[in-house]
Amino acid sequence: MKAGTVFILFLAMVVFAFAQQPAPAANQTASPGQEQKAGDSVVPGAKATLYVYWVRLGISGNKPSVYIDEKEMLRMRSGHFLGVNLDPGQHVVRSTEKAAAVILDVKPGETYYIQLGFAEAGLKVRVETTLMPPEQGWSELGKTKPSDPEDIKNHDFAIVDSMPPKPAPAAAHPAECRSVAVTPNRSFSAESEYKVVDVFNYSGAYVGKKYEDNGLRILSTQKNVQILMLTKGYTPHDVEVAHNFCETKAKKAAADAASAASGEHIAVVFDERAWRLGSMDLPGVQQPKEYVLPGETVDNWTELVTVQSMPGYQERTTADGTALEFKQKILKRCPNATFTVLQEGKTDFTVEWQTTGCKGWDNQYEVSRFITGKTAMYRVVYTNRKLPIPEDKHRQWIDLIGKASLTMPAPVGPAAPPSGTPPPPPGPQ
Image (tube, rainbow, N blue to C red; front, top):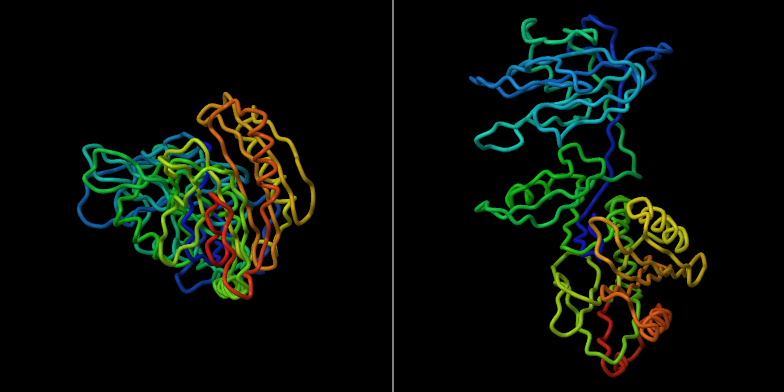
């Protein structure tokens, strides 16, 4: 990912998880009325069962190939399925769209469902593979029939031509989230498009997939899905924080209400220049406050000050834990990055880092301070892309970020900000 500072649109999210269920033995016949029980035993060393299907009905001359571990298994007809037994371990399943390959970490005795579907219309037909939740996969599988023997090209895996038992209802787990990060995609398309740049636990998206504007709006209204919309500049940490910021709607609403009622916010001290708030103000959406210099924008800047608020996040982690996790993720993607801890503490932690010569990254310097509040975790950041930074400016911004304070509103009117300092917006920043 390209580094910079994030512009994240947080939408409502709740938790969702797909429960994997035990599979029948090969060629075991099961009626749709049968249902697997959660306590069914699994024989040690048992294989798993994979069903790949294409529900699309009607007349179709397309017969896309299905590959398992890069071996062509069959040519799939509309309205048919292929069932195979797999050994435990990792397997890769794809059709003609390589970017949409499904990587399965196969467990003994479990059953997996992969749906085929068109990735996009065009001169060349491309078909993507999508891992489906067991209940939905089983239901859609019942609308298809076994593939014709002449369409099966490989028998490396034992073929299963019968319906599996109905899976038990999936249980909700309140500590997981599903999210998709997208960024505006410039193309020759007449429609506005968004390109997926990161995805977590969401079966319908993969890195590189494009959504038209209308398609994204439909996606964003689906239950349990969190959409993160990014501009040109963002860091992997920003995406990771959003992906890990999982909670129930009720808990998030309570945290937001408590934060708004308390008036808790971060007061930032700026230098003498005329900084201004450059972030877009989007109704009903929580986002970082990004301050830019005159003549610059949040999409085109040389220096940036960011204040990010994460209500409820302080209940799940500490300031030092967040900072150190951030360090590990940055180094994993950019081994040339350098880090220096400036201030340690469970509730207040400051680190500076710099990237130079990392492929796909801007060369930049950043000092980040993480502060634990009563209703939120806060992150205060100064970022500079004009390297090398003069030592006096380097020391100045470490000092200014260190002077940021967690404050409550004054009982009377707000105090006038220092000269050249934009007033902190009301509510959590």
